[in-house]
Image 1 (tube, rainbow, N blue to C red):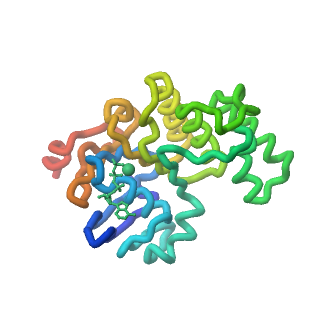
Image 2: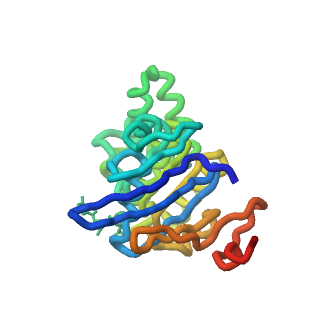
Length: 236
Ligand SMILES: Nc1ncnc2c1ncn2[C@@H]1O[C@H](COP(=O)(O)OP(=O)(O)OP(=O)(O)O)[C@@H](O)[C@H]1O
Ligand SMILES: [Mg+2]
């Protein structure tokens, strides 16, 4: 199984306490990784380091044939990896304008951006919300708009921090459907969640964070079949 990106020797101290101490984290290409761990175990901290938003005390990144210290890898990481906050920040503007924002920043013309935004809204079954004020959306709608806004920037890896928290079951299902679609389009996904039962069916592997390090709970084999940790251990 090929890695999209590898992080080695990740360590971070916050307020004098060691929060993470991870030897190696390989993110497989085109797969979905579920990250669990108790409150305060360091899930958000890890996702922010991975996306270039939080500077670790140490970390080496292997990406696109280069081995770089985190600080030097940061521009490459930020180009291809998007982190989605649990409560996504949307501007006080229409849904369509929120989705177009990244395209304008990337230099797209207004008409090209408009076309892409309408396609993206259609992809997410959110066309009916195009002209609604983003501030007035429900939590579930905001999360789906944020996923759509991320997708339009063509990330190679999407990191989501508890994307289904505080949603009703219908909103959870719709968010999972979008994530499943993204995965089938080849986007690699890693998401933290306390709701293993909701995410498990789209996750190819499951990592658990405890005492600052990662344990494999489930991992896809080369055939794509998911195996439990015991099976992996017993496989030569
Ligand atoms: N800016 C900060 N300064 C000091 N300590 C911090 C900071 N951010 C996080 N921490 C601490 O680091 C630890 C990991 O926090 P983190 O938010 O990553 O946990 P989490 O697994 O995401 O928790 P949750 O499930 O509640 O979201 C916690 O003990 C937290 O108090
Ligand atoms: Mg968190």
